[in-house]
Image (cartoon, rainbow, N blue to C red):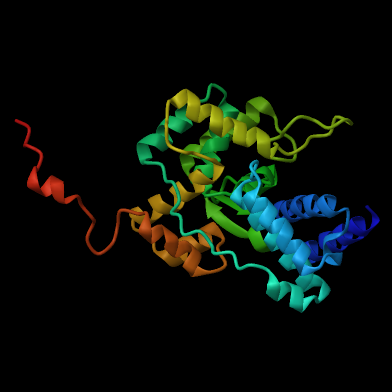
Length: 290
């Protein structure tokens, strides 16, 4: 479809200039492509009635897609309309209320179990780096060998969300594991290489590969809790807060643009002026062991 190809080219250019993540472009393009195929017409040429009809169709059809698909369709349209100066259409789109769902966080014991379960050292280190450095999945994939500073015990995170660079500390324990892994596996360019490409050149570890490691480890560890790659980042932030690190420092370590985003962890962490407790434990305090 010629019209959509032109729109995609503009969208690709705009998201690149504005520093949006590649995953954002992919989500927008995927949802807008479905819309274009539905009407056999590029999305910007549709009138608002057609758009509303399609959104209603997404909400009501039996094989309803995920809520994120609906949201990315609206976000993608909103981005395109703003990009093309279509103010009236932008205003007519439905408002999407952001979820106020709290993140899932692992306990220290669950993190230990996840880190010791994989058979392969490389898999254990991938999970350990996600947790120890509080990385997003795409940030971990982009880490190069030259980004690890063994002397200063720091990791250089290049072009995180919003194209922001940052430094985060690495534990001595993880550095020892990385040294052993580098000596035995001999990775090239990236800290965690994937399969070589058709020309035999090294590639970064795939997102699906990292997600598989997390799912498989969770299964083997026998944990029922919903655990994803991002759960390690949530656990990192929560555990730092519970161990006394201030919010501003945690914000910088996570690479958040706004402190309000970091403040979410105040609702999860077991910390504060006085630690919370269960009133039932006060009624039935544990008996002292003799």
